[in-house]
Image (cartoon, rainbow, N blue to C red; front, side):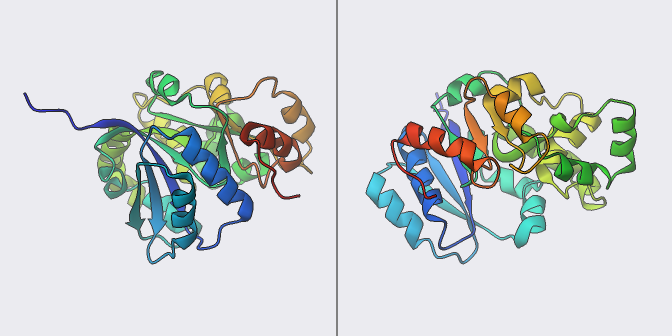
Length: 266
């Protein structure tokens, strides 16, 4: 009998800076410890000096870490890469990948629980209303859906900390590739996966907001009008969060420090 070599889950961490912030290195080491039983793959920008990351690996002694080199240039280049089947083809020997940028955080190791939910995509529920509103303005269809109350700002789930079923993403990129290339669908790849694609393909399963909030959230900016209400709505910690350094740092900082038993910078 042929042995099935597919591993179920990999943690994929995009890196594009040779000198990440000192707090990001602290969080990176936390990921290594928390997800010690899973393979970790660095999604490395082409030509990047990885000395800082190799040092962190050596210090924590994670047994299963590798680097995959990709070519992208800036925000739009990254978004384009994340809707290309060639990206997901490299990960087809996994059932799921957890995309975790360095401004993401996980509070526990509940990956198996979330994979067992069976969704194709679960991302961080985002509360940065101006960003989402600006994206909606780029599409006549999205404006119409919002006007008819078929689309809510909270439907957007950020891909910076997201769980993706690799086979579903690979099939979607293969089938919708020509459409993607002829349109402006992917100004934000996570908006495409969480909002646009489900409108075109109802069989692509995105976790509803009520479920995704328990997976991960991204707070609004602290000077935003809805920051206090969103912050106060966090009654229990989700599996993770995204944008902790940029959005709601004063809220997240003591929680992250308690979770890691390590101080972060002021």
